[in-house]
Image: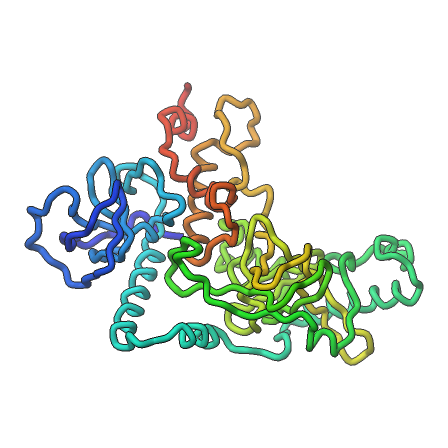
Length: 411
């Protein structure tokens, strides 16, 4: 991810901000470096952030040791998880993602300049803007022969099981052989083409206001919301995009799956098949469904009767009753054995397979800071949120014992 050894240019002082405890909130910004403010008081301080930008973005946090200020979003902090004590990456060395932080601030500045030129932008304009973030598609994009072969295997097995009126768990005994790898037909449902294309349950995309969701990200956030009451088990929408093998997605370093332990935003895994639908570049409005620790929606694979449709579709189904106006959410689909999902425990444990507390904290910080820079958990209560708890655990200052253990020194 980020390279902590990148060279940094000299960082000048910043404009004065209004201080509250160790964070500041400001409505004015300046992108002009000022080298003549070295005599500012302690509260104004200087902004020496990992992004190399020195202007105030409206939400900064101060290092308690060297008293410099940093943009909270650059170091993976949101208003709901401000730590009681904060140390910068120099006073408390840890991995940081400078490239991501720089891109976050660059995009913010570009957006600020656009807003200054078009200050009369309305909420309706903001809602329409999400349509320019991706290419809308009517059908899934499938270019891989391996995916097409898997489609045929799953559909063939599913239809054979349906014709014999056997339950899905007994499918392997029905056919005499076990399903091919990645072709498990558990949780596959049949649906008519018309019902798939025009679901009765209607959902809409809405802008997530940062004031209501306490979110700081480089781009406006959106979510899916129910337009009417939706009963448990009801189909709501197909998730469309570019279909590939899940195993290929996980092994591709650009997707950072080994680091994040979950699919990136706008990417959805089939629940039991070796398939993934990627809507980052091309997809439909379903791409805006957000993740939550308490999801109300689940994913099922869908097969359309007949011989013409040779695609396994991915559908969003209500897991519980969803009220009108309520946000539609999915679980995070975490990789459960990832270090970031491990609890912080004493390194006195004799379990040699466990990661050290320092390694676990590092993993938690990397996962949480990266994801929170792109999206936020849809949980209402951030105190019980797994993602926000990861950030809190990752921000805990390592103890001398942790450092000794990680370096192999005797305790």
